[in-house]
Figure 1 (spheres, rainbow, N blue to C red):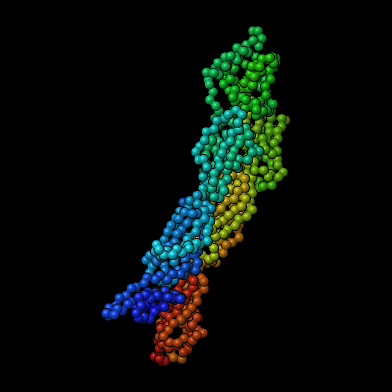
Figure 2: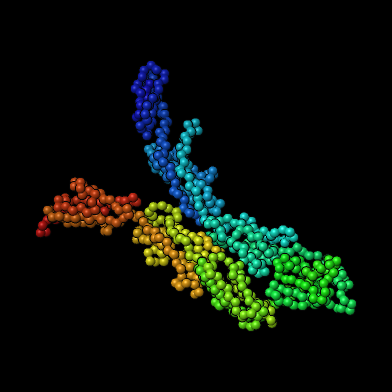
Length: 635
């Protein structure tokens, strides 16, 4: 009996029924031991032992994910170095704790260590933002074989840019209830972090000068019915949600009964024989009007009593009787003084046009700079003034009033000039088109999905980031390669008036001609003719592109050279490439050692024959032939 093996064989041993194969150190990748037996009757049999010689990988690494954009497909690569045998190798891609892809290499028959790669294609989704991803490598043989521990790559967190998504996307209807505050929740998630802006009903817009509307949850300080529109936006998109604020339904039958009751309750309070009573209605501008009371107006007031209560709370109107005070004992009569306020609404007349002129009508001012605007009335006016969160002003003598701020640092909405006139239209207003701008704190450019040099022909992303700029809707980001503009990105769909952070991505597929090119990102605030000229610009530091490309010979075709013995001849193999190529020469004739790694081979002692030059770098090897033929002098 004996063992035949390339590693640790056992010589023929007689008169035994068992024989062990012991190998202290396995050094053969293809180990195929055979146990053989020679029987006394001359027969022989063999049995082959299946041996798998394995080696765990030296390293497992994956490419760091780029900044992904939701809805686009991306490839990631896992590299396994020096593993054997590859046919038992499996690669598991994990996103969080979930396996998203598995790859095996069953068709690889090599027994010696090899390098393998696994590529997974993933579609970016907003839910993946911040999720760790990694590849896990296992060597698995057969069910009863020992279990080997897996080797994992470094885990990388995925960054996904995605448009805003509301936590509660449906439009909402909110009912005003006595004693409760209205809270409109527009919270959304997104990357970059979304910015918020609100469009409010006209009646409430002017009363929220001191309350920021760049917030996800709006709690109006003065509650009125109407449509409140929330817009949430980032560099990837804009979403809108509407909140319809309504008043509780009123029982009309009940109100008709109540109005009739109020009319008869008031009748005893009137002078005998009087058909009406006069009251004085005064608005916040000091403009007064006497109002005739009758049963018809009682009904009208009752129908509007839910509105009147809000007007009283807002301090818009005040009311007092002209003829006589109502008895304090008649509480119903005193309460009716509030209801009659509804009539004041008939005396705020919109008219056919406004007699106010703003000089200038549009103002562009830098953050912290002074601003001054004049409002002029074109006809006699009782009160002329500016309504604003800062520097409000009014006059009752002049036909012009000035809104002036020494240093504008509040991101307020536009101030409003109002006028109350002697003749119709009694009141009108003009809103100042005010643009408060701020140049960015910084503009920077960097690679978004790679580190180190780029490779010719592959796709890459460059990221430009702009910090604290306002208003973003006037911003244009211009991308330059050298002095040539290659792309521009505007943000006109965003509406935030206060400073925000935005970014832009440039997708490039570099060529070798772009090696050493400089990329720049220029932020331009195009504020219109009223803004500074030329428009304010801030430029990033340049990003120098390093592009790797394979060797390229200046003349790639084979060359045939006639050579006269004793003359000097040069074989020029110069090639361009990045990294710079290294050279080697092969020939059936000896080549001097000092010339073997030169781009040009110059000698006066070359023998006729074929000389092959190879230029290589980290990307590729390329070869070129030189055929040297002997030529006799004088021929």
